[in-house]
Image (cartoon, rainbow, N blue to C red; front, side, top):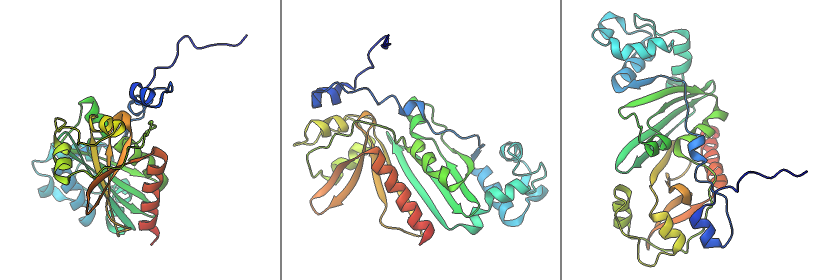
Length: 271
């Protein structure tokens, strides 16, 4: 006997209404695949301690005086000894600062709050410093003023970036081309009260009303101009482009966006 589910899957309201098809809700998937790291959360002062130890091999008693709270996460993670000396694991984790093939920085903002994801890529692996992620902002639990340190293999960096920026399956509905005044778009970055631009069609209007996580990827050595995207929740990701006519928001399906990141990073590493 064929088995049937007890209930039908929930539908994505706007996408279903716009297409005239019953489309399964995808917008909850991102919450089930958040950015996760076992690395320590360190403050700006703790980061300075680690950088100094990475350069000199140790901090010394004067370098750690009065900084036990900042030192503790680094000691617990096995990166420094209680006396401020860099451990073997600490040397491995911090080695990309000295021997990087490339580096990347993602600068992001959500409702006026800033965050960043940085990575230094070396043959042995990637040193990552991740601030509050998209999922943490959406859940209202961002840990501001701290970065989570991790060390990843290069092929683990791409899914880490995807999770941190909230790249996930979505019903990506193309909007009709529309040039938006850059000043209006800049105002929308910090306030969701900015009205939908005149001339916007239904997909763009729906995207405009979602919570926005805006992020820009910059790579060194440069493999092209910075890439800027808007994570618009259930509306998916949009690439932000500019020309003489104004700013343009172009839908970017998740699979293509993931390839954009991998291609840009690979070019920087192997140039």
